[in-house]
Each structure stands twice: as structure tokens, then as C-alpha cells.
Length: 367
Image (cartoon, rainbow, N blue to C red; front, top):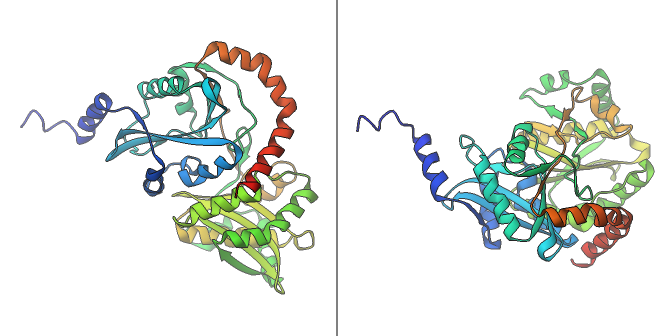
């Protein structure tokens, strides 16, 4: 007994797990349970099943693998599968996710993952992750190339930067972290009489969708996913209280809207749109959106990337944006990968707009 006393429970568990377990694929009936498991961890929202299931509309198949005993899992990886047969492409957005924070993601685990992917017909896996050390560990376990071999479906942003507001219990303390211009915009929005509303209804998103379309056209950017995708996403997140559509209205007319999802600690503003005549509603709406998310448990509010003129607006709330390391590609089948780079990539670049349109149309029609 005295010999066993100095050995921690963590060490014993880690040794046992390393010997007796490997990656196992989840079945559809397992997904609700895993949404609940992940929301008790620091796993990024990009790994949640409810976040990935809507991709099925766009000819992208999510596959989920856990590492560890089914009753005591230690890690999860969500792989978005593109293509067919022995030349599939796997996309891992901000993963794998650690379920047990004290149990590290090891090179042995990654080698097992690559073996599984190779045997299931994947010619390469593309990883993104917020932690460069995790990417370095992934690279050391396989044939890594420092490039993005599939830049057509992104966990937007990949190379961009996110404007993340660190909130506090006190509204005054949170406001004090903003630029003076942001505080002025919030005050002017309040004085203008805008009303703030919250819902988790996908039907409400459908009613607000023309506002998002008009704003995208006016500002010359594209909506990265169709309405059907976001509506599915809202319905999937609704069960776990992970989604909100926020609106600002004046005299009964909606003049601004934000679509926000959350994991355990961070709220992600996925969409935001404002009427051209009511630009002052933007600061007001983001402020109330982030405070409502804080009350729901998300202490950080991700305004998202800031391309073009958006950078100036978002930097007023967050002067120090977060930058991420670039994507990493793990080659699993060298011959197929060589053919992909020489033949398919140039063709894919030309066909991307057409394929994107077809995928959007299929997503809308498959409802």
C-alpha cells in the first residue's frame, strides 16, 4: 500500500488509457450526448456535433471520433469529409478537442488518427488549431506540409484575426476596456431609442434574412453559408441553449441583427447586419448581445474577423485582436496528393464559384 501511495490517480489513469484505447467512431445516436459532454469542457464550438451537422446539406459529411473509454472519453475530433472513395479530404477545424484537460494530446494518438484516416480513404487531413504547440505535435506525428491544400472551406477566419472582448461582472469595467468612440456609439444608440430583442427561433432568422442579404450586398462581401445552413444550425443549437438571434428595432422595424452561438466560455458572432440608415444601432446591439451572452455564461465575446472597414469598428471594442497560426496539411497518400496538387487544385480554383453555387442550391432544396 505504501508503494502505491505516491502515484497520482492521473498518472495511473493516463497509463491505462494509453495502453487500452484508440480512436472509435461515434454513431448518430451518440451525438446529443456528445453535445452535452463538450459544453462542460473548453472545446471550441467548431468541434461540436450541432455545429457540424448542417454541413451535410453541402455534400460535406461530418465524422466524429473519440479517444478513450466510452464511459470515460479523453479527446474528440470532428473530421469534415469531402469527396468519395479512396480520395477523400478531411478537414479538422480547431481540433482535436481535449475532454480531460490534464490528459495531453500525444503523437501516438495522432499516429493512430492518421492510420484510421488512411484506412478510410483519406488522402490528406487539413488541421487548424488556435494553439501552435498542438499543430507542431500533429506535424511531428506524420508527413506534414506547411500549406493549405484545401482553401475552399474554411473555419473562417484561418489566417485572419478575431476581435475578442474579455468581459467582466461589472458593466462599467467592461465598458472601460473599450475605446472612447465605442462608448459614444453605445450611448448614442441608447439615446436614439432602439429596442433590444432576443430569440432562439430559426423562423425569426428567416424573417431577418433580407437584412443580412442587403447588408452583404451594400458592403460588397458574401454570406459564407446559405440561410438553410444557419437555420439548421440554430435548430441544432436550440436544444442545448447555445444560440441567440438578437435584433435592434425602432418603431417596430428591425434595423439591426446579430446571430450568436456559444460554447462553454466564448460567444461567437457569426453574422451581423445593420440598416444603412441606422448605423448607430451597431454598437448598441453588439453591446447588449455580449452582455446577454455573459449572463448565459460566455465571458468572452468574439466579434469575428475584421476585413476592410470592419477592422476599425471592431478594434474600438478590442484593440488587441487574436491571431491564429496557419493551417497544416498531413499527407496520407503521397501519390494521390501529388495528383491533387498538379491536376485537381488548378481545376478546383476555376470551378470553385460554380461548385459553391451548386452546394448552396442543394442546401436550400434539401430542406
